[in-house]
Length: 574
Image 1 (cartoon, helix red, strand yellow):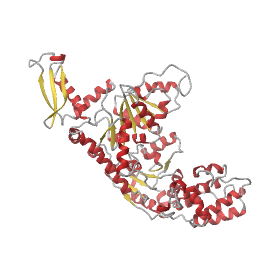
Image 2 (image 1 turned 60 degrees about the vertical axis):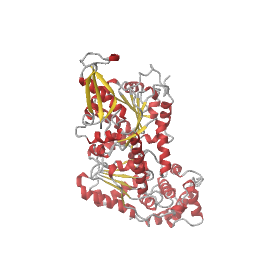
Image 3 (image 1 turned 180 degrees about the horizontal axis):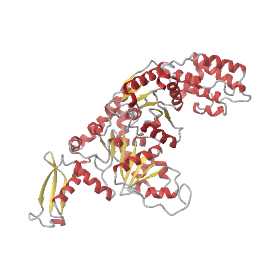
Image 4 (image 1 turned 180 degrees about the vertical axis):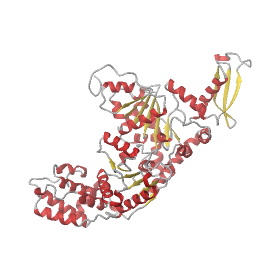
């Protein structure tokens, strides 16, 4: 019996390449990218596929899947010749990637080759933590570090790596940062409410919620015993109570800072919903409280100003992305944009993406965004990571950017030339400039790795700047800022022939060849049975790689070039 249920014949032998992605939504996106390279058949495994679909996918040259959906096939990852980890920084966490990497590393020889793709190597902030995390990632993948440099990124139309965030930070409120304890955020909130030390808004909101709960006979409040994220579920079919629970949760987890978001959420709610359920005291308190709330909040006003500026500057070419931390904020931002008459006439069909939107809806949203049917996408970090948004002309981080990964991923959606990356909120103890410093330190780590390999850096620079350089199989659109690759190993023969020709063509302006005949007379064979023509690849006066032999000068030159590239560990190799 196969894992996942159902009976059938054993699955076919796996294809040479397994391309792992972190989310189901990215399966189709990355499969389309691989197909666009040409010459490769690509299968997709998204989970819950029947046996026939899975068998078809496994018969392709490359199979693209999430780690979870691939595990259901029963095929060990170590049976593939090459395993690609898209967004490989997930190997650090309790993520399915980690188990896959460990299984490959523990497999008997021959071991799969690993290629990891990521824009940021670690979530860590601080030099020592970053250095340790990079070494952990290298050990988990059994890999060395290589990188796409800025000339290559620019050549592929990716400009985000050069962009410094435009900071438009408003003063923060709520509990002072020095007094915040994330491990007891709920308990500390209720302790402040009990002694009257919370903000007036928090005290009034807590009072209204208590009156709503008191209107329900035998209702047991979850507010002090359950996790904040579970509160809404206890509201049942009572939308008004659910909205107040959600507003209270937003306030609690933000240390009373997100009074703006909580207020607007209550403004959006229907105070007359299921009103027969609530006591007269509850209805009166809610009418007074919600009626006195403002809709004019500095951070939302700043967001509207940014969108207005960019709409005026770009006109019909405007394509905006707003990143938020919580799914409820996607609703609030869409409400704010729609309630502004000046923005509403120019914002075309704003769409949202978050963890609760189904994959089919996400695909439709992204297609509408790419086709210009929508010009504003409001999303949580589900769209931050790896999602291809090539038309993004302005990216706004509405909430604070917490990690180097989030900074690189969100900024990476603003990949167009002259696009804007704007941040409206930051942590005082982890500013955007701090995170940008982490990226620079990461670049130094990679530079040291490449410098330790000597000639590889020189050849890499010459290769990227060569006028005759042909497009590489791994383009900036998929390679992003950095990559991790393991030592060379055999790969699929058909793909190898295609790549071999590309390598020779790409390096023609960098490599210099010296040709000769093995025995001096052009005989068919030389010593040790090698064909009679010999070619050597040279760079900067040094021979690179082993000699190439062939029945003709062209064949010998091609073999010498292939060995030179392999020995240099250039990013062009697969």
